Length: 367
Image 1 (cartoon, rainbow, N blue to C red):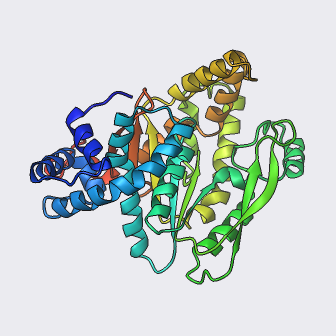
Image 2: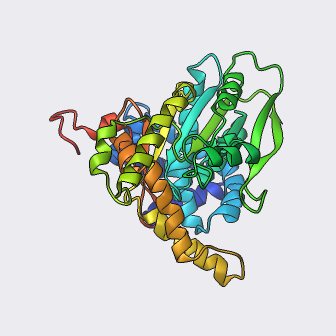
């Protein structure tokens, strides 16, 4: 990721070093924030409140930066300039938005995050949790993966339906457990501890199984992420003209069945207060990125998939819930998604917007 605004980096570096914000710097920051109209609207920034917004971010930045820097060093390889810019333009304002959303409720906030493989759902959740906990808002990162059925249950499921060769598709999760846990988390009465299921992907030679639950108390915000969190069933006639790799009659039948199983997840999705979509501009990039990661692992002497095995693995999930059919439409639907963060080919976040703001208020035409 390259630095796109050297002037912004200079100001932010000064703030990190302990300098006070000068009047000219304040005005420059206000101008930059308002220039990106879609992002400004998404984070509730206007010409009326921009001064207060900049002052709040500037005061928080120096204290939040060290923890985020440490986390990013562990998870991401970002130059300091890119890290500062992401923290200023995306992570910090998004965390502040979540705090404001929580304050509107009389109970904890359940924030969904959805995106195809490789879009950075878990990384975003962990960074937001770090910032939110620093802001005094106890936050839990919780994944759809944590709701997988046990190893034994999935073995029986596979005997019933041999097409479920990997964990992940609809039907491989314990939805009743998920609704019970989320109901406990969103309850206004949070005086007692809550047991959060966790999943160990390394168990049973990589098949995975439940592991020791995490016990939490007094959670204010839940970041619930997963590759089809909040995804709704679609009209099954669309599978007749579905994109590759849904090609054969058997592929179409599998896709239809997975689509039908989404119905079982709707009670869980109804417990979401908001949904963020990490929108990969070309879903095929996830396969390319995964291949690069596997090659790097093999070059470092670690185990990794061959290109053939990887292609079969990725395309299997595209056959279950194809990104172009189930995720891409969310970027244009304010009924399903509240906030979209586009992910560029270099892994960097791009446009940030509310789907409703992608329509020009004057003409109604798509921007």
